Image 1: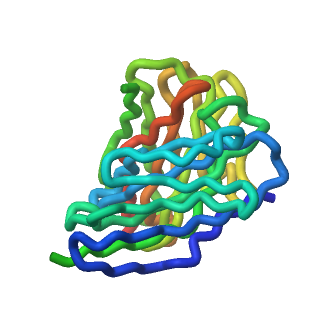
Image 2 (image 1 turned 180 degrees about the horizontal axis):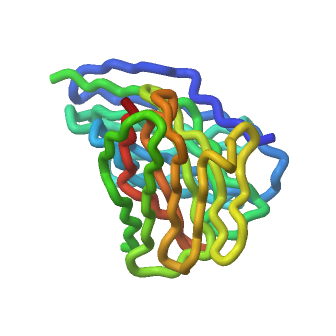
Image 3 (image 1 turned 135 degrees about the horizontal axis):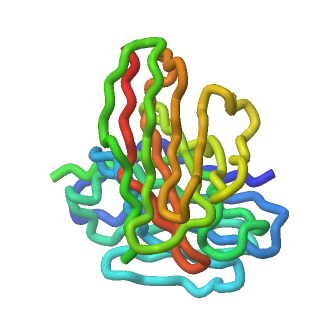
Length: 118
Length: 113
């Protein structure tokens, strides 16, 4: 069975601080996708990143960066110089191999509520 | 990018009535769509996989007779909550996509009074 663990439930930081959101996953699949989504108070999920299991390169997109390590089954997300607009719930998710490609059913972690104070 | 729409965005209904939620893919064909439910301050839990032209596949613990899913076309999947009760109040989100991208709808907030 697939499982995604986001051990942190709530994080509060002051603006401009860096913050790392942890994600640990479990799967028996050899091919899978990992995702991060942002959910602001409006409720709509905002796609941040998708990473397939064969691509362990870290990725940077502006203030966001992701560290994927298969050896520790982790896919951590770092926000550099956080801003108030980053306040939201962040979900890490894992897809199943039996669905090909990116359109797969996802197993979500419990989410991390990030509050960035001015 | 591709968009998935949901209608309605919010609905309030009385206990015992049925509510239909529509999920549309606006610029791609979706043979498979997914329905999730999210209770307040909780994670998204997959309810069912909607398959175009065939029966939906329900996750364990989800009552298929209560949550009717119809995927009659490549751009529309519907979820009908039958005989709704207050405990069905939740945020319902659908998703669909291609082999390369997955897109989530904006969600439907259902309140059963």
